[in-house]
Length: 408
Image 1 (spheres, rainbow, N blue to C red):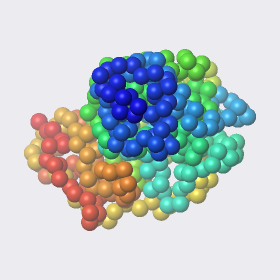
Image 2: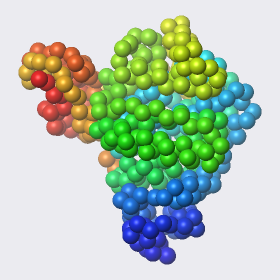
Image 3: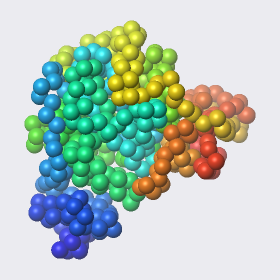
Image 4: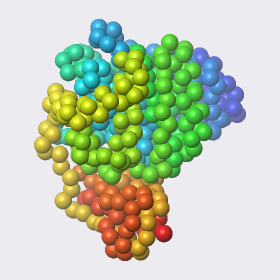
């Protein structure tokens, strides 16, 4: 039966709900081996899935655990998800902004996929920060301070959690059907009233083209319709890193600088303002322009940063003792000119080699390592100028750094 299902999908045939249920629940319960699930995931990546298969798989994921009841939380709950990109720390910024404006935010996040960092990995670089909250703790926290960022609880879409980890290390990350089922099952199970999806495309993202992003967005909207959820999509370019920092502690520190209003006019700030405004617009049923004014006010008044501090303190974190490695190495310009491009994917791979991500499912992450860019696209540089600083440890490797920056 197991091999028959794999072969059926390998040939591009449609799997029934019963076949998908048998296989995926078998994997969750230990009756299907990891190598067998890897084979099916690869077949799905190559052959794709029909809408009916995707709807079925989403339901199977949701039904594998509990559904969080947030009906007792006053206000419209808007959840946001990013498909992941190099330097993407948007959740750390927009969750406190939106919560500071009276919109409750219950954000259940994941770990790194491929070369893109995970929100939970970043938050765990804050000493003491807990990401393993129970449903009872999540409910109490959102009632008390209007914002919580946690991992999936043990009983919330446990199937996705297990499959997610396997996809990360088997080259099956960028399948549109698997991305859609994974994201939407978590958003629906976490009790969101409305859902905003930030779909990234480019060489530093899971999806390479804008057209792939549109395709995924339309699919997520169709899944939302099945569950009577409003879904909005924002497409964002990930051909260059988001912000200046790549790596867990470094990205948390950059998020703090944005919340304090110390960063302006960067692609990170622009995207966070856009996402926050969209969420506030959806929740309060106001125009995007009015929501934009509220977002800017939250940052300039310090309300957004104060909410982030409350979030960290409530989840046991120590914001004053975030560590970065004391060992550094610099990347310098090999000639004078203007920076034409910065290879996001190469930087993502480099950050993993340094120890900021996982090459294998059970790899340990070093939160103190990473990359801090000194320049952005369009900047003029002279030969010998520092383009980036690598924060390294004794185990990581800093190779293939010469072609990251295109200067002409």
